[in-house]
Image (cartoon, rainbow, N blue to C red; front, side):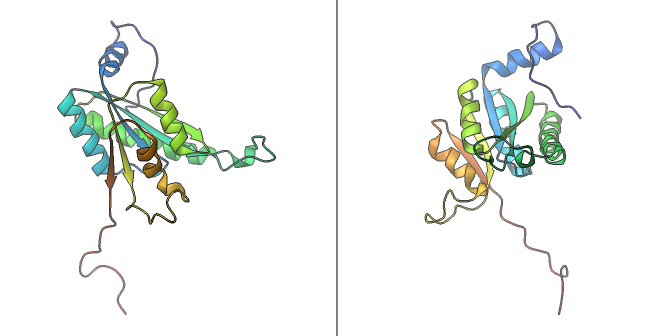
Amino acid sequence: MGCKAETEGNASSPRGEVQKRIAGETILLASEGRPISRNAVAMAARLATDKAAGVHVLTVARVWGSAFGLPHPGLMPTALELQCQRDIVAAAIDELERQRIDCTGEVLRSRDAAKAILAKLRQRTYSEIVMGADPEPHWLIRGLLWSHEPYRVRRLSQLPIHLVIDTPETPELGLGSSS
């Protein structure tokens, strides 16, 4: 599916060339587990083209907690959930490769998506972050739901972050149920 694993490589190999170009400046296209929208991919592609940068696609598969402070297999993401996240990364990479942008991708597992994304920022240098997000929640409930993670990343990150808000499309006339 065009997925490039992040591996060390020498500069003479094609994979080494991709890593060498991406090492210069990289845009992080991140998701807390939701599907990455076409608008978010387009924003990352536009930023990468303007800066001649690569894109790293990152999603977080949710770990649901722990039992008595210990990891419990029933709370870990299932194989189906992990495959769903891999498919999200692969689809974003395919779209970026169609636009001739160097890209890599990975799936992380975490109980706290914002912390996992911020930890990734400390591991590797990125110039900007692009994330899909819901409309901004009310201040009283901000941070309570998993879907509010992009706003936590924006608040805690030192990097410029572009939140791409996709509103649900309204159905066209003639579609939907009629009573």
